[in-house]
Image 1 (tube, rainbow, N blue to C red):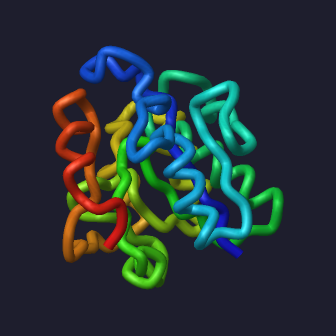
Image 2: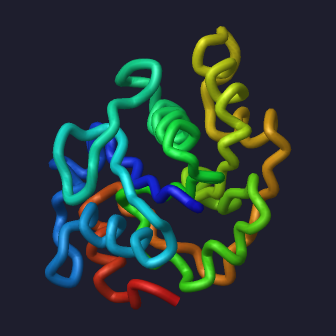
Length: 177
């Protein structure tokens, strides 16, 4: 079983407002991400927010740890609930390919251009804890390297919405491929 994770804890400073609530094709970015993962995963959770269209988890071990804190929270939840892996994406990544789970299988693997999009085995929980509790690099790529994750090139990269201009560009392209 796979747990879906929407990473939605960023400050949206470049966007200028809460980008999770920004509208694309009549839906908020957070709703689009939850809906997309729901098609592939038995359950979907959101990390880094207190409320949303799916159950929300606080970052682990505390807020402000970046995407790793959200993935750590989801890995803990997945382990405790009997899931084998976590499929993660950012709230700002509409346009994920229809075959994303196939492309990222077997875990661990991540999208080469956007490492927050990945398939992480529950067995990586200890590794992410060590990174977040240690003094080394607290980065997605450090985590991926530590667990031997594969970088997967997607045929067409999903959007990465960080600014209002990025949202405008996403409105001109199809949501999935």
